[in-house]
Length: 390
Ligand SMILES: *Cc1c(COP(=O)(O)O)cnc(C)c1O
Image 1 (cartoon, rainbow, N blue to C red):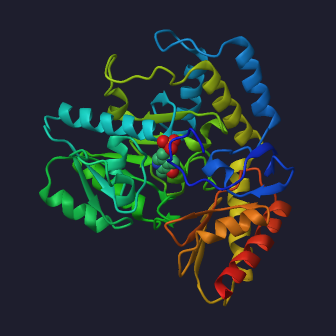
Image 2: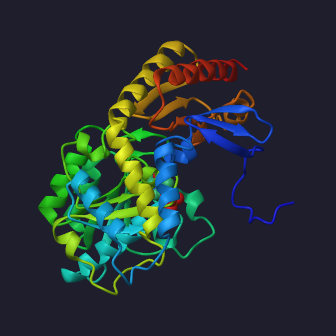
C-alpha cells in the first residue's frame, strides 16, 4: 500500500546510493545505469563537482524570487545563449514548462502579427510533456486519453517529412511555428534525416514561422554536440531544454533568438521557482563539467562504440530490426514488444528502458567510459539474444 498516486508502474527496486554510472539498491546490489534518470544524470551519480556546487550554494542562498535580480540566473542565461547562439533565456523547472513557454511565446508572436488563431505544427509520435498544452502537442494518444477537451491551435504531420509541412504552408494561413524534436526520444529513438531540420528552417524562413526545437532530451551534449541542431548546421528561433541541464537538479530553459526573444514583456510569463540560485548553481556546474571533461565528444565516441559493438554482437540475430544512435541516445528496435526486458535486465544488475513498445532505449550518463560501455554491451546483447530466442 502506497500513499502515492498511481501514476507509475514502478520497478520493484529502491536505490540507496550512486557513484558514476553505478547505483546500489538497499540490499547493496550493484547496477549499471544505462537510463541516467531518463537522460537527466549527465554527470552520473554523486559527481563531486555537482555535489560541491549544490552544497556551497545551499549554504549560501537557496531561493529568493524573480521579483529580484538573480546573479546565477543571469550567468546561466548568458552561458546557454553563448553555447546555443541564442539571444535570451527563460529559466523554468522542467521540460514541459520549457515547451509550455515556447507554445505561449509562439501564440503571442502570432497575435503580434495579427493572426487571431495562431496554430503550431507538431509531429506524429512526438513527446513534449504532460501539461495540457504539451500533451496536446504530443503525438501519442495514450498521453492524451482521458484529458479531453484538448487545446486547439495545433496541426499534426508525420515526422521526418518536410513535404508534409510544405503542404500545410500552402493552405493554412494561421501557422506561426513548428515544434519538433531533432531526435524523437519517447517516440523510439527516431533520428531525423540530415536534411530535415534544414528543410524546416527554410520553410520557417519563407513563411515567417518560428522553428522551435524540443531539445529537452537531446540537449546538453546527449547527441554528441551541445545541441542536436548543431549537427544540421542551422539555428532554431526557440529551443526548449531541461533533462540533462541540471545534472539531476530540476531545471528547464526556453531559449529564443531574434524577434522571438523580444516577445515576452513583464507580466506575460513567470515562475515562482524558475531559475533560483540553487538550480542555477547546479546547471552552471553541470555545463562547466560537460565542457571541461569533454563530454560532448565522449557522448559521440561512446555512443558510436555502443552501436557498433551491439550491431556486431546482434548481427544476424532474428528479431533485431535495427540498432541506431545519436551520441548516447541509443535505440535497439526489435520486432516485438519487449517491456519484459527491463525486468530481466534489472535482475542482472542493468538498468535499461523500453519505449514505443519494441525499442530498447539506452541513455547512459555522458561520463560513461569504454570499459563500462563494454560491460553494458556484453550484458545487454546476451539478454536480447535470450529474449528473442525464448
Ligand atoms: C522528457 C521530455 C519532456 C518533458 O519533460 P518533463 O521535465 O518531464 O516535463 C519534453 N520533451 C521531451 C523531448 C522529453 O524527452
